[in-house]
Image (cartoon, rainbow, N blue to C red; front, side):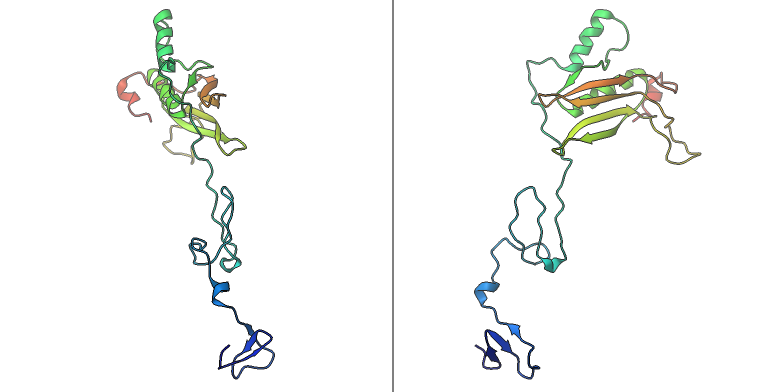
Length: 207
């Protein structure tokens, strides 16, 4: 109890204050905040479950930490006893001796998305065009389940009368997830509406 004020029903009136205007008196224990329960703005926040946005008290006007999504999902572990897609393609070329050494046939399986990109990149180098990542989709678990790798000339230029190489080419591959956390080619289009590069000097300018 303060000697400078009058306590009435747990309320303390400041000296010289108007009658009826009181403020509550709180103990030091009730004002303490558990360690680690303070947000970046310095306010107290209630404990929340993992995976749900962390919300501070109303003193921060509903500040919420955004849940990060789109992280890379679990990839299939590399198996030394499994023949890679590149080796299978080279073996197939050695038998038929026709076409390109690397060919993205439908059903080709990969351990990771990077392996699939490098495989299609080798195919594009043989044919004479560039590649880039395009549309992708996330499943209900917020993990990538579809990825398209398209020709560098796919789509339309961002602005007219530019030096962009995009001319609406339809060449692409569509990758889907397999049950063993791998990737496989579900669709392949190899029709180009532009001339392909024939020399190594021209091919080096592609991405």
